[in-house]
Image (cartoon, rainbow, N blue to C red; front, side):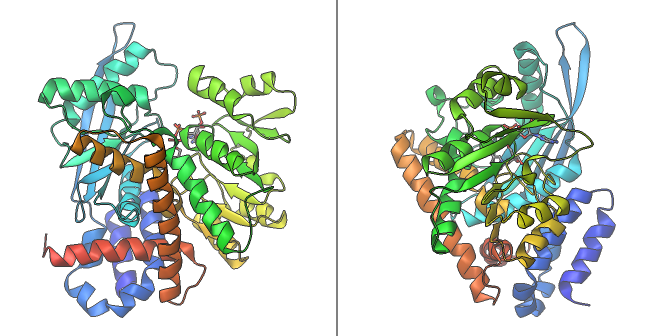
Length: 448
Ligand code: NDP
């Protein structure tokens, strides 16, 4: 049996109750076949695939906190430190009721390759909790964050593991967590990224994932002899990634016609008004119905039966920016039938494997999140650099470094795909380019 198949079987047997983790490992290992086949004897002897699919450690802990009514609530906290071969663990903290070990492991596993692709010295990890920030008061959010960090602080540090934001964890939560870390460890260090600008945050970090997605997309479009100007774009989500992807797409001359949240979506044929969207989502933390109420050209649709909505329109570019598995085979068929030309993932694993394969089979250039949304973590690493040298760079300096990194990532994945005879397969290209660097470091560092 081929080494990849052998390890896939072991991973499935060992993690049978973790579908998202199995999905991510299956996707990555399948696309690595050409590299693994070329080095099979050495990788098998060193158990490279067994080691790279097993986290260095996974930490689970109780998070007790007191709600506004004086009742004790209990959530489960996670930190999966996946691989630190090329630098300290780095990856966000997700606060969402759906969070479980499978989701955190899939995200941590993907993060290893994504972080490697940035060319910066960061390993991969991920964390979170099944805590639902929705409907909680600021006081309750603070109580939860302080309790979460009280335990997490034992395992992280500026040179060990540097968490960041993700779904449900924005500047407010990072602030509360940073405050608690400082208090417990008595250390003023860059232990978290996504911090506020007055206490060590980096300019352009807020915009980085969305902007980075568009810098990479723009380069892909250019390399296909095309241009962003005049393109019609569908975006899902209306959180951090979606908002700044919308903003940059419009700065580049494209028109974004959709955004969504977990309960519904907006179709705005005149193009999304980013300032209004920011007001609704970042300031009021309200539903998209408020956007529709304030803008005549916008239509709001309630999600029924789990439909995704935003992928049914005639668009040139689709950018899923909400959550995992939000673009399935039916959505892909609709997009292709409507003539979609490019797809790039702002979220982590938003496209199912079948949908990804459908785009590839129909020659729609498709870039997965590992490469396309790496701008967030790349800028987090730039925040770490600024914290280490105790200096702050200007917005323009960070933004231009981000652009350089994203353009570089596009060419790295394009080149890797070509090197292994899979021209245009950016999914394989990203996995291969990310994997080779990590594996070389693992081999150099011996069995550990
Ligand atoms: P936010 O919490 O800011 O926004 C998430 C958006 O997705 C919201 O609009 C939310 O709607 C929607 N959403 C969340 N869960 C679901 C669900 N189950 N079904 C439908 N919609 C849902 O998160 P981010 O924008 O930061 O993250 C979005 C994605 O991008 C995630 O996959 C994240 O891992 C990935 N990512 C984020 C990075 C960053 O820098 N922020 C970096 C790299 C990747 P609602 O408001 O109703 O919950």
